[in-house]
Image 1: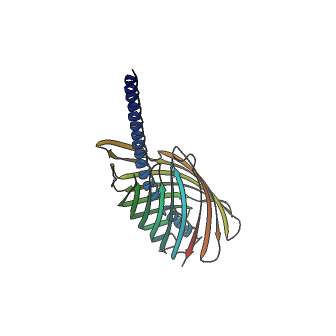
Image 2: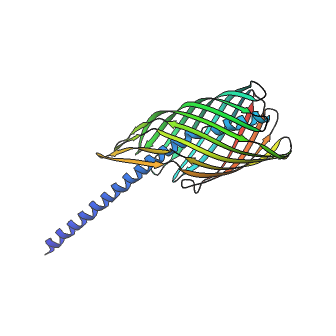
Image 3: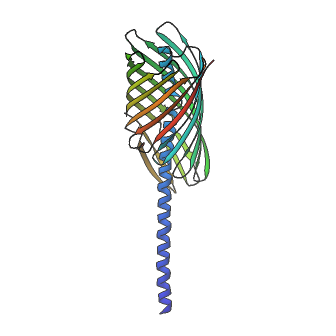
Length: 317
């Protein structure tokens, strides 16, 4: 009888252990798949945020006469959260522009950036390098048009499943904007704007001990409706707010995740619709150096808990 009880106990224990190991394996695979998605989302946002906003701001400043044309530079550190992933990125832009006449300004830049991201399982480091050309035209009635194009690459070092993997990705960014500036008073400006941008990041393949991850190219087509208000307190100090609505018509990450001989397809949307509110201040330290401080809150499915504070410095040669 004792032998029968021991045999039954051994069978039950074996079944429980097998079930536990299976559950652990399923959980690990689910976490790996989640991290694979988070990696793609992080790469896309890092590429889109690598200095593009500063190019638009530069076009605004030279068009409005806040800054003179010539050689300039700006550096910034920024951080954000995407679901359960956390990311940070710092970069520097070096540029030069020229006023062809009183209404048209053209310029070019090079940029370098470095960042890191942390996922449910694993992490990655990235380096971005790019070159851009831009131009802006201001009309006599206060309306304006601007456009830019950037090409570059992202060098990725990912640590997934305890194994490092290096990959180089190429990217392109196109943007155009149209707006109109009103001045209700001498020190107040209201600026509604519409902007359309397209960005693309090439496909990539990452290989780890137990799995392969193959990503399709990531494309974004974003329409932005923005309202900016600005108040000047004196010649050197301005405060501003920005409210924005964003709609991505094509943003999606997709690929194949293969582990232990099994293949899974995955896809995730890149923030179909989101909003952004920003408060900031600019201060002109002297003729060549200016500093900015801004707080930004994003609203949307992927941005629910994201509040960012960033600072930047601008130097004109």
